[in-house]
Length: 305
Image (cartoon, rainbow, N blue to C red; front, side, top):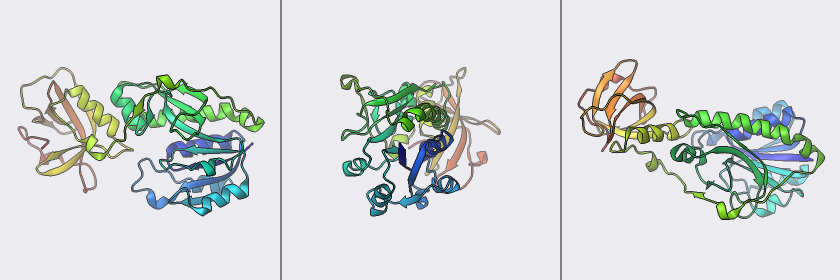
């Protein structure tokens, strides 16, 4: 079977890489236009890889644009792969591929259907996974084609989990390659009685509440970090992103939640939380390039509203 891939992020790129390496007939690629790079977390331009392998490429702003339909109709793929795209692919587009459309979700479906799965996986300490499934009218609800768990380590940041998931995704595509070429993908219905759903996350969900215990603040920092917008707080009336932190399990202290209790060059800020203390090791004022100078911080100052 030939396939057309639609996508916009790193999982899309790794899917295309695995398809090429596995000898799958990629008839075309449709990717989100590169001018979205500043607004789409984890954006990856698929055009260079497609062009390097003489695969027809179409860029789009909205997946429903005529150029996307035109490529699919002309290339006549048996399968459509939709990987790493937040836009809804309409049913009439999926129906252009007679063998169906395949989606990707990084959780153990039917658990954790929905939005922002990488962040929620870290926040809830859930089992991440690679799930490839047939698209249906209901989000993340179609029959499972292949599903493999992905390890989640205690100090993983979002970027660590994204990278590890992409490696497992590539292996899953390679494992499926003979079935794709042979025209007979396996499928297993989901148990919808076990489904759970994740809500959309907004930037405000990344605001740090230092009244929370240190381990919960650290968890939020890791979940919201690159390639996502980052957890944030306020210092001296300026919003500040906390990209990375480090637990301080042996330090309790008696400051107020959000109070800076130590400043150490090379280590960062030691901040009191609702229970325990936490090192903030990479900070950046919103709208200013590069990491923040620790000289701007003093012991006793408060972070947060």
